[in-house]
Structure formats: structure tokens, C-alpha cells
Length: 92
Image (tube, rainbow, N blue to C red; front, side, top):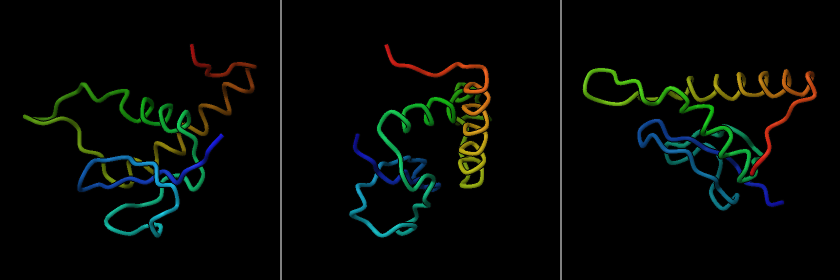
């Protein structure tokens, strides 16, 4: 299982998986997770954008760095709670 650094750019509204070929926290990106698989990235993106259909004015929700970092903490808590109930997220 290959690991990447999950990063986010507030200006570009873009999550990217970096293969450690770029220095962390550069070019407008912040590190969201230091070690992340493709699957974990997809789970996080789904969790982060779960309310993305809500419109504010004429544009979709814009995520701030702080929103993304808070979402990581919320997801970790959610996954821990699932584990306590012997539940997990699986792929089809």
C-alpha cells in the first residue's frame, strides 16, 4: 500500500496526494495528513464535501485551510467511534 502526503490549497480549492517530491507546506499548499493512502484520501474527500451541494450566493462552498484541518480531526473521531462499535468503511 503506497503512502502519500495529503495537501490542500485554499486558493485553488484542491486536495492533492504528493509523493513526497515537493517540500511540505510550499506553493500555497498545507499538509493535511503526512501519511495517506489513495483510499484514505477518497474517504476524506467524501467526508469533507458531504455538504458540497449547498450554495452560498452564486458559488459553491469555499473551504478554508482551517475547515480542512478541522474536518481531518472530525473524521478521525468518527472513524474511532465506528471502530468502538465494531464498524468500518469498506469498498465494494
